[in-house]
Length: 480
Image (cartoon, rainbow, N blue to C red):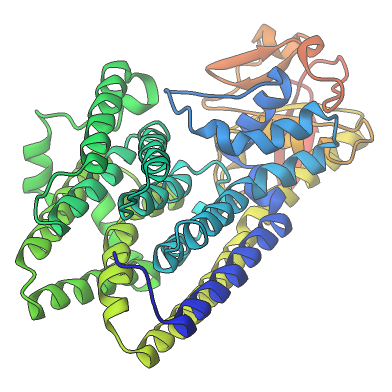
């Protein structure tokens, strides 16, 4: 990964980076409600407001970084709208800061551009503000930048080693797949220097091994699902092309998964043309292993966000070598053509993200429509079941109670409404619905006394729940 020497190409890369990261931050503001008031993001924002501290699950400590900005806004007493915007722009701002660090102090423009590559392959994932996979791209690119350096001054060596350790830990403790990112980068570095050991590599390998061991020993709950079952794996791989996730990958191939395939084929042909057999073999074996592991872990995945995130790392594994090996070997004119082409594809990706936003906007509008119907009857607390709301929302979510209480609290007029969705048919004799002093959240974390809600943000009156049904698509509120 040699540092670019051509000033004009370097300048073009920097300008493109500044423009697109600022656009990313801007659309983070524009689509703040759609990004934050949905599913996991809404639940974690609700918890942050309630606890007044970081919300960390499954040892994903690196999530504290993107939670810092909204948490500071909560501590400062900012309004709910400001908190939602802060949460929405936290990851884009972090990505931009990483770009500035990589491009200026670390002087590696091409790696800075790697941070933009995931935008080519996300549509629904953009509306999942807490997306650990997107944050993982940031930490992995930082790790790549530190591994690419060979400082000779002692204090710079120390800073570089610290950067490797911290970024490696962030990769592992943001998502289980982060171990693949760190392993790929260490192996990529080791192969590129023809298996010569360096202090940076040894420190990185020790850090990854130690962190992965701790993570594997502590894994439980949600993250345990990312551990392949050795008894099922052979059966899954022998029926590779019949798995749901493979079909969903094929259905999205022309939309965005074509990009990592094109980039990887470019790198593969480059390695063959220049007889870089070790690099070719490493990339080929690693990508095959990753795809196999992904199919095993995500074999039943069918949700739009899940399918996108499952194969999203491919754009990193293909994009990093294409930008760091192939691009710098091209002439100035070809490099500028590539930058223009990438810019056009990014603009197209932003357009598709904006188009996808309509589904999430429709969901919030429908929740507000239901809230208005409830308020006309003086009701603030509703319960329904999955069968009753089937087809009402274009996008499904398990966090409707959190989403409804947040979107209706944005008005700050005391007209907060919450909608709880039962998985099964409503049990009208359930005492929870008759309890006036409660907020029902999710089946596994059901009752919140109203007195525990943060009064600076959520104001629900004491009243029992009423049932929500629909008549020709119109919300109807009735007694249980």
